[in-house]
Image 1 (cartoon, one colour):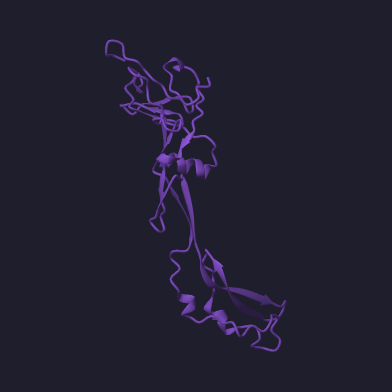
Image 2 (cartoon, one colour; image 1 turned 30 degrees about the horizontal axis):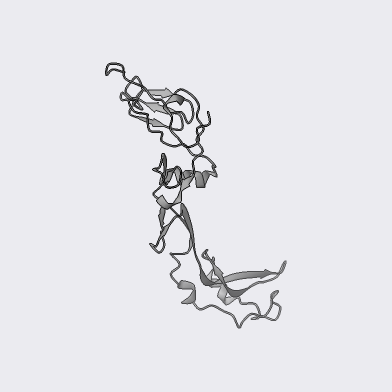
Length: 208
């Protein structure tokens, strides 16, 4: 059943496909590196780079190996063996590489603090789903946004609130439903449910 973005009690018991606009005005991301808050965003990717020395080796079959160095912007920490600084290309007449003795890093330059380098992702704590200017019908939390990003999903399981007078409980008294397919009872009993399904039960005379 296509239901737009409206929760309709008449669809109980049917497989419902919701198509909801994302209310970006309800989302905000606090970026993990700077602590800055970006409103109207679902996720922010930060890349921290430094200009660091990188190493290149030159090897001659059956001969010697020498090394050259140059600086480049990078978000990864280059692996450099400081013992190689004693084998700079150009030190010996028969070195296989170019003469690069004019570009050699110091030990201090190879000991810089690079702990902040890398790529990080920050996510909104939550975002509403529904028509612009109207109350959100559903909500995606940070965990769902992370799942969609890491798994490359175009859809996500959402928590469906029950219509008035109905409860998301099993006949065994389960209090929560895992959207990936398991219903957990109060006594620890596991029941198989359809993947992505949400089950509602209406009490009769106050009893399930």
